[in-house]
Image (cartoon, rainbow, N blue to C red):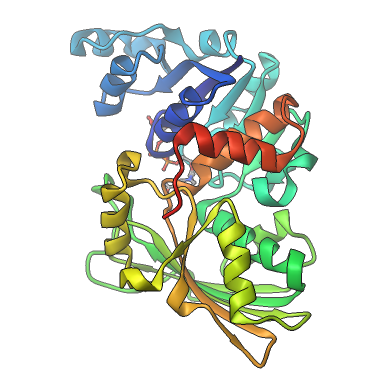
Length: 340
Ligand code: NAD
């Protein structure tokens, strides 16, 4: 069993912990929190040993009736690999600690590429991550872009990509973020950081991205245009998407044209926390003009799509499964990942 620790049991960390615990070849040896919270209670309830960033705060956990197993250095001594899901910027500060305790580490998209020197996406570069000590799983938006661009590129070749990200203002639990009543250009300048971030996984790709933030909490929406190197038909693109293990097709027949209805679908399907681990391409939007121009909308569940990528990154770095598609299949099956 691969022994996994999660440093930062928040939005991403708690989901990665549950996904790891569901795998046949992995176990959770510890998760961490900074202060007593609902998530700390959940860690106890799930029987994940809970470690704390500042052991001087143990009294506060004791007073809340939350069991503490120790501090983060103690957690690191129990694991083969740590998934750092602390807020962006803090993860990089933890690198020295991981080196000291000689554990492999995975960071999230809130850190820069340099934190690990390798940016990961299971569909694009799983095999290049085999045996690595440090890997960064790219952000939710970059993950969504990489999946579809790489898939189209493999079959038709991609000349260039132009994409606009309409981003959620906050995660559902975030009470301090916004906007409440505005569309915020983020940034107002072009390009946004997403294109260069895609290049950390797909170097050399001609991609320009723009982004804005809107008052919603569930999912980002991507408006994607790709120029292809060879002719394609709409049917061929749809076939390709249907075969992809991490891209779902929002069937036109469902009548779904929004993120809100997708959340309802995920809930009705019994997905934990309504999580949509796959990119959700709207079938009705997939259009090919002049045989070479592809247009589509895809919704990306910001809290979920990177979760399965973290699980695959663990297997690649530990070298236990050497083929990306095999790992994706194990991860998906363990989660009971039925297509949308
Ligand atoms: P979050 O704030 O929900 O959770 C962070 C967790 O880290 C919290 O539990 C907090 O208690 C803990 N923490 C804070 N400081 C710590 C420290 N010094 N040591 C240990 N734990 C500490 O954040 P999140 O949204 O889960 O984001 C985590 C990372 O994932 C970031 O890099 C972020 O950019 C990335 N990411 C977030 C999303 C998203 O939509 N939320 C999507 C993709 C990637």
